Length: 397
Image 1 (cartoon, helix red, strand yellow):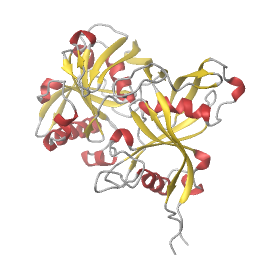
Image 2 (cartoon, helix red, strand yellow; image 1 turned 180 degrees about the vertical axis):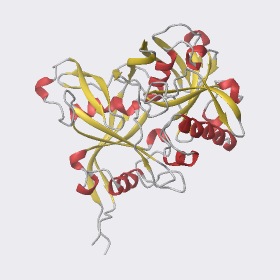
Image 3 (spheres, one colour; image 1 turned 135 degrees about the horizontal axis):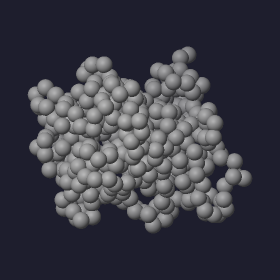
Image 4 (cartoon, rainbow, N blue to C red; image 1 turned 135 degrees about the vertical axis):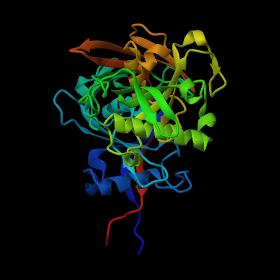
C-alpha cells in the first residue's frame, strides 16, 4: 500500500535576493527535529533534490543556489536572543545539505518570520515603528540584529525600498551582523585573516600563483583580482556559468583556498563543503550594463565584485559575501580595499551583476589583528506563500 503524503506547516519567503522554505522547529516530524540523516532527507525531498535533471521540478527549489534553501527557526537557546536560526543549503543534483555557513539574504526574512509566527511576545512590539529581532545564527554561532518595520502592530512588507536583483520594491529591513569575523579555524586560530596576512600567494595547479585575500567575515571568502584570471569584473552569469572551464578554474581556486584557510584538510573535502568558502573576483570601478539592461556608471560605485555560489556565478551578491566585502574593504591593503581605491573607508558601494549594493563595516586593529565589530546593510523580505508543504511519507511500515 502506498501511504498518503505528510503535511508540514511551512512558509515560503523571499529574503534579499534569495528565497527558501521556512519551518518552525516544532512543526517538523520528530525525527527531523534533530540534526542527522532524517532531517537532511526531509529537506532534500521538500526542495526536490537530488535532481539529475537540475530543475527541482518535483519540489520547492528553483534550480539555483539562491532558491535551493531551507530555514529552521526555534525559540533561542541563547540569553538575550529571540530566536535560533539554522540554515541548510540544499545541493541541486547531489544528495547533500550543507550546514557549514549562513545565508545573509535569508537572514533578512528570519526577523519577520519570528514576529509573524509568534516567537516574539506581542506586548513587546510597537504599534508603529521598528522592532529589533535578535537572532542567533546557529550554523556559525553569531548574532544578527534584524530591524523589522512594524505598521499597525504587524510586520510591514510593502514599501518603496528597491534592491537590485529583486524586481519589485518592498519595505526596507536593516541588518546588523555583530562581530562577523573569526568564523574559521585556519592558521590564525580563527582570526579574521586566517593566515595572518592581508594578501597571500595561493598556488593553484594548472592556473599558477595568484594574489588572494582570504577572510573569515560573514562567510569565509577568498578574493582574487579579476584581471589575474583574465576577467574584467563586469561579467554576467552567462559569461561564467556556460563555460565549464571557467567554473572548474574557480572551483579549483576555492578548494585550494579552503585548505589554506584551514576549513578542510584535503582538496577532495571541498566537494562536501560547497557552501563555503566563497570565491569572488574584484576589479576597480568601471561602467557596465547589468543583467536587467540598466547601465551602472563607474561614478556610482567604488569597485566591481562577482562571486560564485554553489558552483555558479551569483545573479547578484550573497548577503554573507557582502559582509566579507565590507569587512575586507575596511582594511587598508586587502585586494578588495585596493580595488576600491585604497585608504580608510567605513562603507563601499560595489557593482554586482544585477546592479549595486552599499555595505558598511568599521575595522580596527586590536593586539596586532584586524577585527570588525559590526557590518550593516539594507535588504527586504516578504512572505510568498504560507500554509504547508507536502512530501511523501518515508517512514517504515
